[in-house]
Image (cartoon, rainbow, N blue to C red):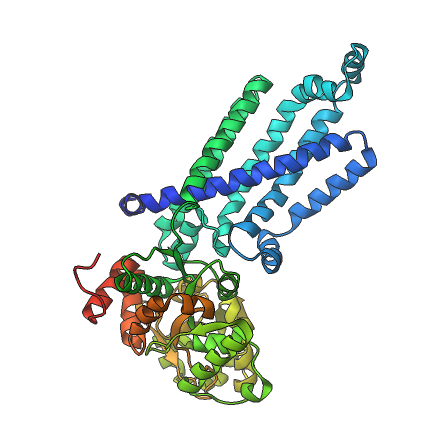
Length: 513
């Protein structure tokens, strides 16, 4: 419990930002859903058959899994806030539309007849009689929608939209339950508070209900707008994938850029998401720089010519081809890489390796039927992952489970699995007493990390290129593994770890702020 409150105190600034990100996303989604659903329901009250179709469509939309919906939207609107907002609006439509329709359709016909007898027009009856009567039911639908939105909005962190979900993801990645609890409790409290508030509004006069809702929307919107940086000077946005290593690297980038240009406005977006999400964000101009690996470029991001795909490339050749293909296909540039190789690897418990005489991946063949593997979903699907292992090594494990990166280490430690995919610099290898099996068939290509950016950005910011190229040829595997260990196991701040390394290597001055 002490750890929870210490973490809460340390990250209160980040928490406040995440709360407003979460609220602004939720409130905007709710507002858009109201604007769509309420008028539609009002119109369909007098069109029964069309109303049934509308109810069916909104019901079907709500059954689509949230992750699937986000994935479907990304190719069309990119990543970040837009797909998250669209998804949340879709999920909010059903309860608002349904309750509005029910509230209006169940009004006593005699009341409407009396209003008509008094000479009220259709619009006047709607405003003065029908909506006030139906308002408690409509508000109930809005309440349900808001609770649903706040809960679902935690998934927005998966695509770089921020919010309280970033704490949950970070907690899972760092094996830090206190971070996960902060995100989960924060989201639950928001849902409870706003659900209670809206329930209270049900008992107010319609005029006061509408005024209160408008005030809340304006307040949240105003705070969100002020934090958006709309009037702030143009910033350089550096993003990183989920994990300690990208977090450390982007903090190094920030320090080096600010030393090269003290006036530079650098914004960091850590734990942005998966490789495909981040590459899409760079391609669409949502971020300016992120650390990528040469092997990942060739295996996942560019179209590799057939004659090149069959060749075995060394580190220099892999980098050269990655640079050329990025330039030709995406007008991007990959700066000179760092020294270490963060390649894929298969790892087992040291005791398991000794018991079964395992030193290479090929050795797994003799105990193939005993293997219970836990791989990341990305590794399972990659040609330099499990698909490649099946083809090159002739291995087909009887049990292969897809897991989030941090969870697979917990699983092997608990004995739920006995084989996992790893990166050669993972701190968990040391933490959980794992050994890497030698890639004796040389399946895994070279993976050297380097800053990736658009060519236009590099030409526009030569000072950024100069700053980041100071890392070229720096950082050994041992150094990177140690830094990951400091963050993941010892709980050190990635920014502090990054800064200490740069000072020790003489890349920045100790007194620099």
